Image (cartoon, rainbow, N blue to C red):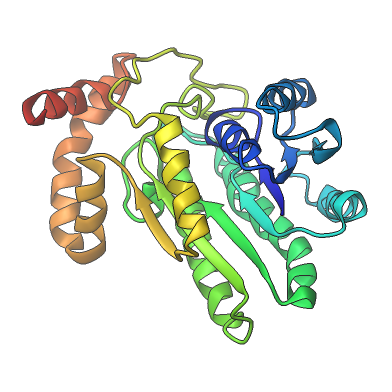
Length: 289
C-alpha cells in the first residue's frame, strides 16, 4: 500500500509517518523543508520494517498549485499507484480580524483550502481509474465551530468541510473511493507556534505549555483506526472541545453564547502574551480529572 502524507515534517504528519512505517506501507513524505523530511525518513527506517526504496521524500510547497501535477506524476512513476492521500498540510492563525492583513487571509485560503483541493484534484483521476483509494483530510474542530483569533483559519477549515462533503456525493458511484474528514481538537504540535499573526512575516514563535492538549501519538492512533474502518467523519478531541463541537453542530445558538463568554478570556490572554487557551482549559481539566 502506498500512502502520501503532506505536512509530514512535523506534528500530526510526522507522527503519522512513524506509525505507518511500523505497518510496512510505502510512504511519500511531503512538506516544504526537505531536511526535516529526510530526518523523518531516517527515523522511519529505524523501525526496521521499511527499506530506503520504500520511502520517497518529495518536498514541495502546497500553496504552489503549479507544482502539484509534477509531484503527483513523480509519485506514480516511483510506486505506480497511490492508495491513500492524507491531506495534512496547513497553517493556523492567532490574530484579530481588525489587525490582520488581507495577506494573512489570502495565505490561509491558498494553503489550507486551495492547495488541498488542487492536490486532491491531481490524485483523483488516478483513483477513479482504479475505482479505489482513500482521501483522508485532516481538518480541525475549527471546521465545525468557530473562535476568536482564528477567523481566517476557521474559514479555510469550514471551506474544506464543504468541499469534501460535496466531493463525496460526486463519488457515490465509486464505492471503492472513500472520502474521510478528520477533525482533531488541540493536539501537541507546533501548529500554534507557527501560526500567522497580523501579517505573513509574523509567527507566534512561542513555546507555550501543551500538557492540556491530546498527545500526538494518541490522535494519530485514533486516525489510523478511522482510516482502517473507512469512517467518513471523525471528531478526535478531549473535553471540553469535543462537547463544544457537538454544541456547534446541534445547538448553534447556545454554542455562540458560550463561545462569546469564553472567547473574551481567550482574547485577554492573547493580548497579555499568554497562551490563548491554556489557562482556562487547564482549570477545566483540573476540576474534571
